[in-house]
Every structure is written in structure tokens, then in C-alpha cells.
Image (cartoon, rainbow, N blue to C red):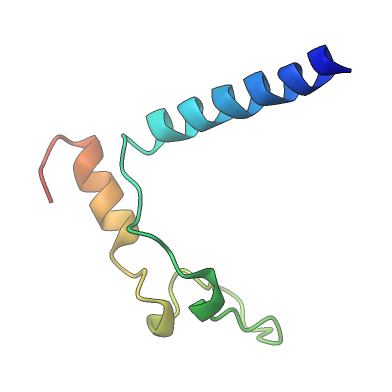
Length: 73
């Protein structure tokens, strides 16, 4: 059983490392998940909680893109 738990720890550690690599070691500052707004009732094509102005994530894609290109944001 201990080795099974160890396997889960290793998998989680590797997933975390890969996420950091894919995000170019960038992460948002302490996201408050309780304040995120996602209108699940919105049936309009193209709606995303990322683009919802109330969430303040509009520039997240641009910031990640700029980090990818080597520009300091």
C-alpha cells in the first residue's frame, strides 16, 4: 500500500513539473476560486469564463504568450 501512495506522489510531482514547464514557470498570484464567475446557463457560442471581465483574466493569454517569446511582462 505504501508503494501505491508513493506512485501517486510521483505522478503528482511529475504532473506539477510538466505544468510549470508548459506555463513557462508562470503562475497567477494566489487565484481566489470563490470569486470566479462562470455562467453555465449562458448558451451563447464562444462564452468562456476566462474572457468574462468579472474574472480579470483577459490578459492572461497575452502574458503567457509574451513569456513564451522571451519578453518580460
